[in-house]
Length: 141
Image (cartoon, rainbow, N blue to C red):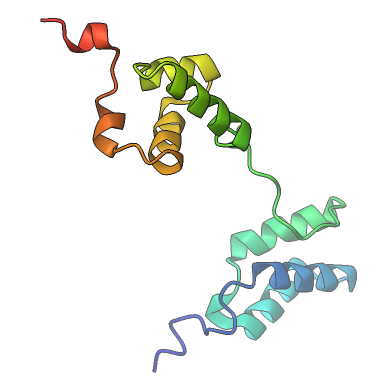
């Protein structure tokens, strides 16, 4: 009953396998339509979408050889590296009253990363991490 509407367990999570098969069909000289029909027949509803198949076919036509995903744009998350964790720990031990903002500015990393480091690596209570504004601003009236 559900076999026609849902992908089968054997076809879920196999996009790289499908891309390899598309590359094979491309090298055999099959057209996009023929390749899509064959891949759809093999993988059923677990098949890559028509748009994805078209994109990959186009890239193979342009000379692409790899079937792996491209690296995603953006800055890699390197803030939580051991070096940052050690330096934040050292700063906190030396200057107990430093705020998360001050720590982030000192290390030039995001405030949320500092909060996560304090909470996960040094087991600071979440409440401390949320209320760690500079003392001068916290007590002003």
